[in-house]
Image (tube, rainbow, N blue to C red; front, top):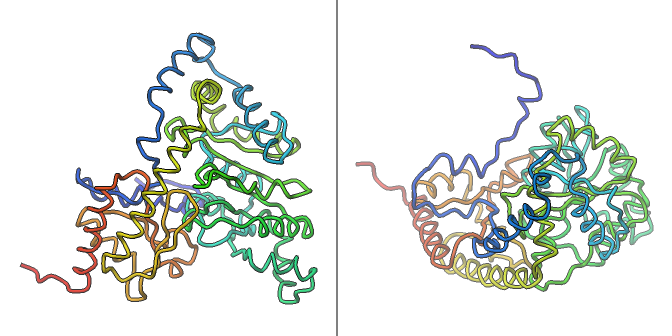
Amino acid sequence: MTYQLSKRSGNLRRSPVRDILSFHGRSDMISFAGGLPSSMALPVSQMKECADLVLTKYGSTALQYGTTEGFPLLREWIAAMLTRKGIPTVADEILLTSGSQQALDLIGRLFLDPGDPVYVSFPCYNGALQSFEMNEATILPFSVADACNFVEFSGNTNRLHDSLIALNQSKFTYLVPTLNNPSGHTLSLRERMLLAEFFDRTNSLLFEDDPYCDLLFSGESLGPVASFIRRSSILTGSFSKIISPSLRTGWLRAPKEMMAKLIPLKQAMDLHSNLFSQMMIYMYLTSFSHDRLLSQIRNEYKEKQLFMKKSLELSGIGLYPVKETSGGMFLWVRFYDFVDTDQFIKQCLANGVAFVPGSAFYVNKEEGKHYARFNYTVSDFAQIAKGVDRLKESYFQMLIPQPSI
């Protein structure tokens, strides 16, 4: 049967992580592909207690429909947290979402018409590209270095003139300043302050995604770029990386006048996000020592990152020195030019190891074909070692094709 599908459905970018793993259902697959937290980082016993506390305190209300905006106490907690970070916020400026991915979708639906320009910094989170492409945006590269230079040279950088005109015509600029996915790069305090000045001067809108800020190994936050901006901006975050991804609870901070448009958009999508999950997260945050768990998570992730980095560099695989990051969940690896990671992944999957090819993080896939993203958080040390061995085996099989039998 032939279906009359929308034009928009033809723009859907598939999730490379889901597709990669769906092709091979082998039980011994070692996946460096997803952005999954360590199982040791998931507070199972505490969440079991939280579920009981929620049902005891709120009874049937916890199982009823909720408001579109989300559980008021959790919104107040997030507003207070952001205020402490230098972004004065009230609960009416917070919308609870089904993960921060829904926040990306909501902003895309609110702002984007077909062909509208959106600026992103490449490599860019593939879920953001997926969302913006679904809304038929024209995705353009944003240079943090050029923006900072523009401010430092008092706006007299002539070569930026044309791009600044285009920037003012764009709907927003999307950035992940802390522990960028996939590169793991974190902007310095100086860069954040210069970027804030840039967005203030150019009167352009910043959409800042901040899901990894609590995973800086130092435990110290530089503050979102939004904390330095004098005008309005959009900020989103998530509890998926630090409490539980399955509870699908994220949040979006936006000006009240923008929130008035976002709420009916979300109503049309799902009425509201999971109220029981929101109550459980609030109960956890206010009943347990979350900071102690975060400290354990950071220490574990730091050790795993160093172990994977050394394992990759000693493997003999054709790659450049692997850059350490200041936290997060990923290593961004640059292979030698003769390694096309879109082809390399096929041999790796056959040998039981997965990663995400770099092409997933670019509009022009050619720009990422020598890169790959490796997750180190969900695997234990033995799995990391075994997975790198499989990568090595795949690499040399690719260099010296095996004769067919």
